[in-house]
Length: 91
Image (cartoon, rainbow, N blue to C red):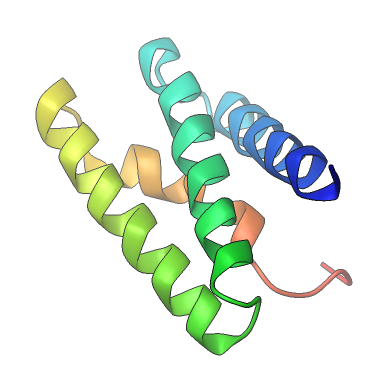
């Protein structure tokens, strides 16, 4: 149950960060979904250095695929999707 709450809040955080960056409307939801799945990969990988690697690898590949399918820049997706993986609560 705790994982579900974390994944949903991660997706919402990425969505609202995309909104803050004035990202195009048709890419916001997709960025949130990619961020949520990426955080799920992070949780499955053990929440350590290896978890960051696999989650970032997944997010990078998924953002490149979505960017090519939607004919947009990959930076639009990556910028908001990586925000939940930034380590440190002090930020």
